[in-house]
Length: 253
Image 1 (spheres, rainbow, N blue to C red):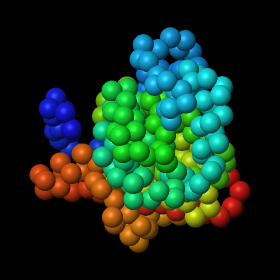
Image 2 (image 1 turned 45 degrees about the horizontal axis):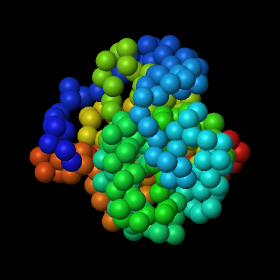
Image 3 (image 1 turned 90 degrees about the horizontal axis):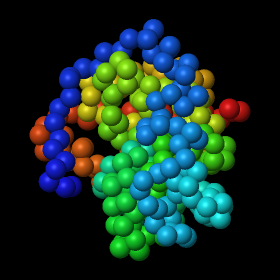
Image 4 (image 1 turned 180 degrees about the horizontal axis):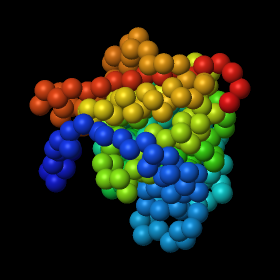
C-alpha cells in the first residue's frame, strides 16, 4: 500500500433514505452512477492499455479479438469475481491459492488496476484478468448467464452523500444482474466496516426471490482468504468487519 493511501473512518452509521434511493435506482439501468461515466458515451480514454493479448480488458477499448479472449476465459474454468479490488491484496493471494479457478478483478482506479495487473504478471498468474471498467456494465452485458461461482464485494465505498447514492454497488438492478450471472448455489460475499451497511445489503439482496437469507456458515469457504488492505487496517485498529454471505437459489432468473 502506497504512502499516500491514508485510511480513515467514515461518518459512522449508514442512514438510508429509501424513497430517494428508489428515484435514483430507476435511472441506474441507463448508466446513472457508473464510475467514470457511461463508457458507451465516452469515446476517448486517457490511460493506455497494456499491449494485447495481455489479460486486461476495457469496455469499448479492447479489440474484438481481446474481447473474444476475455469471453473464452470466463467459461474455461470455475469463475470468481472481485468488484473493487483495491491494491489486489486479496485477489492476488486467492488466485495463487486456487490455480484451478479463473478470476476477474475489477478496479475502476486505473493506477490500482495497473498495479494488480503488473503484480499478477510478476507472479506468473495465468488465471487472473484485470479490468478498469465498471463491473456492473461488464457483468450485465458480457458475462454469460449462470457462469459465476462467487462474487466478492469487499469493503465497498458506502457513497455517503445523497447525490452519490447511485454509485453504490448494491442496488435492485445489479442484484437482478447477479441473480442471472451467478450459478445456482453460487455465493455473493459482501464485507464492510460501515455500521448499517449490512442491514442495507440484506434488505436489497434478499428482496430478490433467487437469493437465500444471509448464511454465516458460508464464510467457512473463505477462512483462508487474505484480508484486503482495508480489512487489515480495520483488524489492526480493532474496528469490526461485518460479513454477509448469500447463496443463489436454484431456479430460472
